[in-house]
Image (cartoon, rainbow, N blue to C red; front, side, top):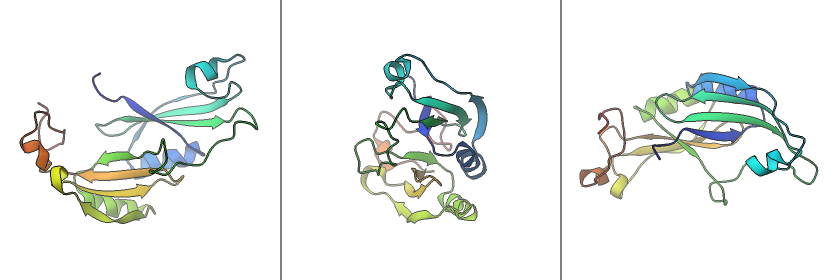
Length: 172
């Protein structure tokens, strides 16, 4: 394994997601794929959804120097397979996407300027992650994201054989 390529997320409104990803997070739209459906069990075998499920559209975005995001608009397969609500971080399968920023305070101000309210105030990490500050926020559809910044590195890196990437230090 060399690293992550993309994160796929299902959204309720592709246009809303695009405005958020492009206008707020600064992502670049890369490509769009049209409808995907199958008359057999392909969707179930390959994607793990009801075989009657239809992917209405897929859009792919590039996030700076990090991982790409692939957005899906699904139409659930049937009444016995409704779409479930967004999981919380504490739920099995709960998740968030953390985005590295150079200036956490400027990034939080940028979110507010675009109508995105951060969850609380920036928090300074302690222990092995000392040197990092972070702040959670939600997308317009409720998915949790996190801003992280550690321009001087994290405390654990002083003795660690593997260091996290950040812009102030070239890749090793």
